[in-house]
Length: 341
View (tube, rainbow, N blue to C red):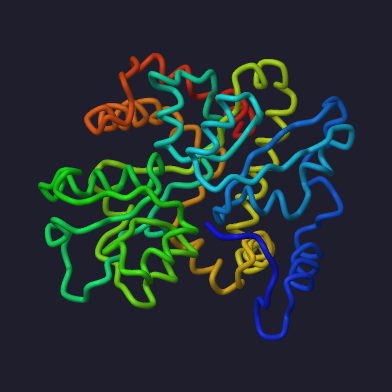
């Protein structure tokens, strides 16, 4: 994730010029799907600085154009844990959060009344474990070392899975809860030996460190992680029309990522305050499923959330594991199925 801002994107192109170019190519002035005139009031949408279709939707103002009688309020969060707190306090209607935070939200003691409504991406190399010492090439060699990660995040979950697979427990290393924007200072101050995190911090750390494994490896071993969109059940029930249109817009944006990756990267770079080249590289670390692809993925998602909860329970991440039915109820598939048909 990255801090918002502006800067040079490619050559002498400014962030504003890049956004103008991307807007012209992607058609920001019109709604890319059927305009919905029925939705009124304010919709509070939480987002994180993750390079995916959601940032493209935000940058292109497609929701504002598709819901002309509604007010779209975008709220930035630094982590999934912050999003869970926002859901718990009732201060957001729909927001981005990883599969691990989503599982915690659906499990005891939180038991937040929300549902997963969209799979933003399947996380691969975009989240990885970078270490400082050049001689460290395996996780086993990190025994006794200090490893930083944002607790409750997908990176935290992948790290715990990787430690377990390597025959280490969380007590064999010193785990430190650090937000991404705090990691660089800790790294430069020699306070941490390794970190499991995402870009842009990951790329910053690899300038003096090296990657030994990533979320692509934990996914291959049967423990995938996702960036998801969740919404409160009450919002979904009272805004079915919004959910259908919103899902259509997200699906359109995923199509633009595939059809026009360079142009889409320009828009996302503006939101991240990054360079187009950097975003293009980051996009390769994720898989972005369309609505049609998600029809089968969401059928498997409840069992994957259950497996995540079972693992988190062993790590004292949740108090209790819910039933498969509970996690099935935590996934809303109606809009995805409708858009895919």
